[in-house]
Image: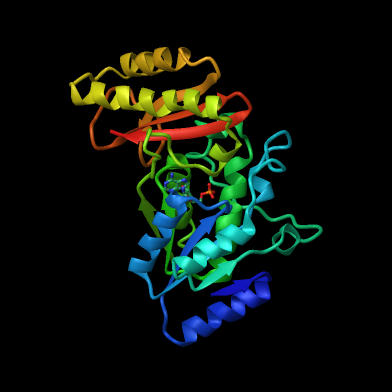
Length: 280
Ligand code: AMP
């Protein structure tokens, strides 16, 4: 497995693969890899002859008072996990490599990214669309694999690719969960055992929502109210938002139309911000 740290090295590697007629699947991550990430790597391997994983804690998608410094980092373990999965190359640039002094160009999707997490994290998606555009340009993947866990991110990135005619296909892998239902997340590492216990109310509440839909409840209000009520019983959990939205546009739903929507939820578990969602 190659480990590449500079844009020049990465571009030379890409050129070599393209020259040899290989197809490239990219799995962008912020590291501290868990089974959810590994499932995306396995999906990527099925879709292209070469798999590149990027590991970059992207500073521009964190707000000034967010957890950039506290974000968990485990580079050695991540490299070992990638090697064990048969990844061909890891791109692991420094912040200065991606955003050299005086950097001033950003890519912004202005509609899908404005609601949900865009409200409480105003520049978050600008950071995501900028880094993904840069990765797509540097690595030139044929496909890029993302997780359904970040439902709004996937919708924003699909729109980015469509609007800018980027020659990459976005593939979405399902959300992997621990046995107790908690969606896997690098940030779960920052939870104490009792915070983790309380955090379970997030996936349980979403399950209550999907079960209501299965029982033919069609009122968005009722579903949102039940979810809010369930979460309110967990001492450490503070709901940021819960909304039923269209899967592609992220527009709030007025009534339930199964097969087209997703319940998106964000919550603080004390100081740790978690998101989760359930496809309807
Ligand atoms: P992150 O390192 O958290 O930025 O995530 C990198 C990629 O992994 C993103 O496309 C995420 O949506 C995806 N991902 C994160 N958690 C999970 C999960 N539990 N299951 C599947 N994919 C995930």
